[in-house]
Amino acid sequence: MDTARRAPAADLTWSLLTRERGTAEVAAAWDGEVTPEWAWGGATGRGVRVCVVDSGVESGHPMIGPVDGSYVVAPVDGTIRVTETEPTDVCGHGSACAGIIRSLAPDCEIHSVRVLGESFGGTGDVFVAGLRWAVEQGFDVINLSLSTSRPRFTQPLREVADDAFFRRSVIVASAHNMRVESFPWRFSSVISVGSHDVDDPELVLYNPRPPVEFFAQGQNVEVAWLGGAQTRTTGNSFATPRISGLCALILSKHPRLTAFQLKNILYLTAANVRGES
Image 1 (cartoon, rainbow, N blue to C red):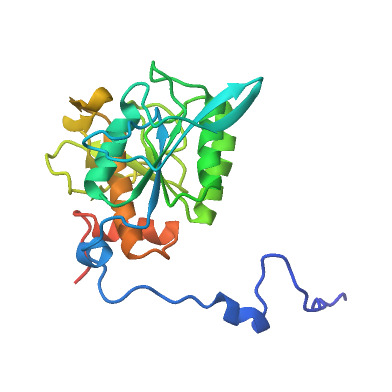
Image 2 (image 1 turned 45 degrees about the vertical axis):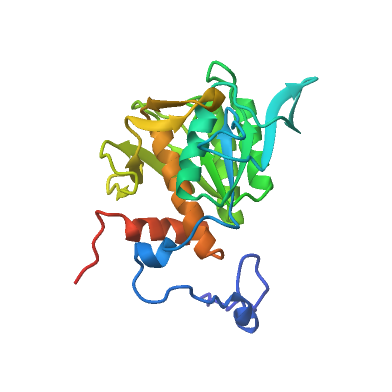
């Protein structure tokens, strides 16, 4: 009869040996109950770099203020490249998002990566390239109020989203306004956002029926628009930057949080989540 033999100890990839345990010790940041006051009370977003991947951001807009970095993604000689550009917006969508972020986190840095054109459209290749570049720059929060429904971009976007998750770059992604399959908001590695119709910019609700995870104000809201103007509009696109701004506040106060921890804090502080007594 054959008998099982114990394999000799080995340094396996992605394993932890007893002698290395000390390198995995983590200083826990929790100090009592996780409340909104604990999570972001007194924070202003200072020290946090937020990137708006969209149609550009208009620097100097009264609702936005300065833009700390502005880039455009476009094909050049058959190759998609990311280059610096003037901090302007070609259709208003990105500025609307940036203004909402600024209203919550006034002292955060706002950067812009333009992947959309004047008609609010763009290509999947440019979209993926712009998001990948933003992740590679190590932005703390990436606001993504857009998605694609083209299946061939699903895997590239999944890889970028996973990379962001492990790099501690938090992607906050807008759910599609219609019931269609689109990405990357459906990935568990991002924070997905839909809108609610309550006239309360501070109200955040957790959704116990995913894939949308959180709801924030995004219906009939006043936003920044082109030429220093303002307008009222509706969409999940405008709920998303509210969560991005909130993430900036939390990271400003607790800069060492991982994307996993940050999502858990959003859950624990949502208005409809109650702890067991």
